Image (cartoon, rainbow, N blue to C red):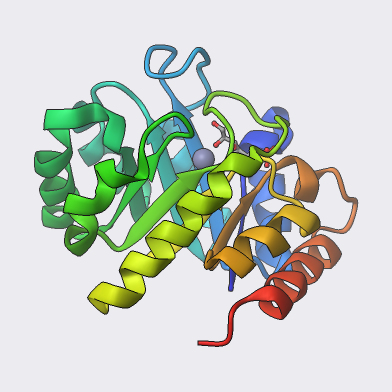
Length: 222
Ligand code: DX5
Ligand code: ZN
């Protein structure tokens, strides 16, 4: 089980300090939500913030591009220190070239699917990715309520992974707390992005350990 605190919920005036706190918490990944104000109705941060937090987090930087034209950004995020880059299946024709481009840059490839998008849209790409991200809120803002209707999508993706003998990670993002992490783990998720529910705690370590324990307890026996 991997816990990925989302920097979106950290203190923007102290991203370096909060990335170091996430490092000390034992979180394996740090999730960075990149928003362009076009694909989603919000603007967050860009490669400069990835570069700034890179020295403070030795684990994996998991960059989630909620951007309409991600191809113009890929090189900058790679140079800034991104280890994994996820783009959205809603980008349609751009998806296949984007996945190959990320791979050609030597980074792990992720594909995200929004709540209103049918999960069948990602089926053609499953053998091209290292991660599938099932969004459990409509992207754009942290602190939103978890959308229960997304759980069957997690189950479906986990089923395809089993049937096809694939090894991609199954990540969920949005409204993830101990309770919803348990529900998603039971459905087959193994990677949990959590912003609000982690960063609101003084001790990130306690929050991360508890979420990992709960998720592991509910994970289906493989
Ligand atoms: C939505 C963002 C959020 C963020 C985590 O666009 O991707 O899901 O990572 O948000 P919360 O605060 O719900 O954990
Ligand atoms: Zn995200």
